[in-house]
Length: 314
Length: 252
Image (cartoon, rainbow over all chains, first blue to last red):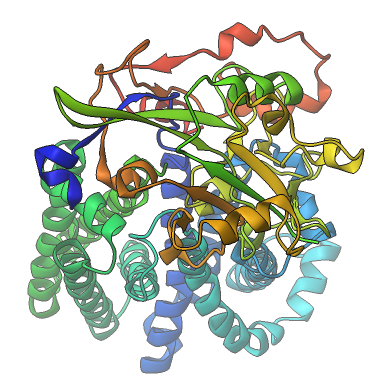
């Protein structure tokens, strides 16, 4: 850098106030909730492929229910983060298709709609006596086979819904740290991590083998998430801005602490806990690992979202 | 027609006339800017020099803000200007994330994204942008870069080899050029920002993005409220110590 020698050092002596963090915790929560919402579908599909339905009796209705709840958290905070929430309708009335925000909003809306249908069918099927004479309940029960028909499409759709945030980040030319192919994989691992962690809480009555698969997915997802973050954290030599961003975090401070908390408590500890429960089938320990992984994922996403925004752009 | 801008930094004397003219012409609220002139001191005392860099939207030919805008609020005009339709803007701040030059701000009065439009409304009436008119040394040169006979095209040709754009590595193809610039003046990574080390005021960060008096709930109730007169001075809400204290209110 030219400014490392005295003769060329440049100091800003008068400037305007600059924006600080523009996308804050609501966007972190938005991404985290979306990871859970899509992850439970992806991991649920994997479990249904590997095991009989009878081994996981509540999966058929709990999976779309969890997804529905977290997708609505995601949508709520997407709206709340807009300075004009009611103008969200403009995305549907005046869509601009080069924007990953537009494509993502359309896909996420379709996905949430299909998940709602699956949740209703799954719920009414799981409790056949509930609202037995209600017209809506009757008609929903009447289309019960529709659940299995749309499920493959929903699983397929869960992948782009998971990944489109990485494309938004890639389009964020001002934040070079995010403009990395690794971001796509980070999103996918985050979904598998969050999905397996969320399903662990409803796996108490499941077969040992299916729970072992959940622990396996959690272990693999935490391991690869950790490796991806390490690679990005230490070897982001792709641009001067990404390097400057990471140098800021490497030098210490609150983001450094948050990052390492996320790595240790969110990825390393849950990895070993998940591996150990694969043999012991300790449900409590597995739930503890799931909680840590979910908290750690939030913290990791939070740091990664905020640190490039600390960089002065002009 | 492709409108472009050129600033000759050798001529600029940092009077900030362009900054003030822009504020007045476009009624830019306090605490935000479309055009600013940054002072940079280069060298070590006593061998120092002060350089002035006017910074505004680059009206890129491949504008990341236009690409990321989900509702086409940011759009190209036929003359190449990247314009903003504030009535369509949803306030997602995606454009603020995409602009590598940090040229877009969230207007605290309208809570929509805004930026320099090269005074598109004036150009429509055959006038020059306010900052060009007011410059006492004609450091701002504006015109059609598609027309080889225009003043700006001639100026670029006369200064072949010395014409620069900011962050060319971003491949945004800016239509805003500089003559007499250097790494220290055009590259923010080559500049140190020492907090408190400034001429007239501390170098601060904005405490809020958008209207500082509006909570998240207010955003949802806004269409049902009667219009309140905002005190423009209240936007001068800076934060000298915490870079991100506005996060307490959700980041915006």
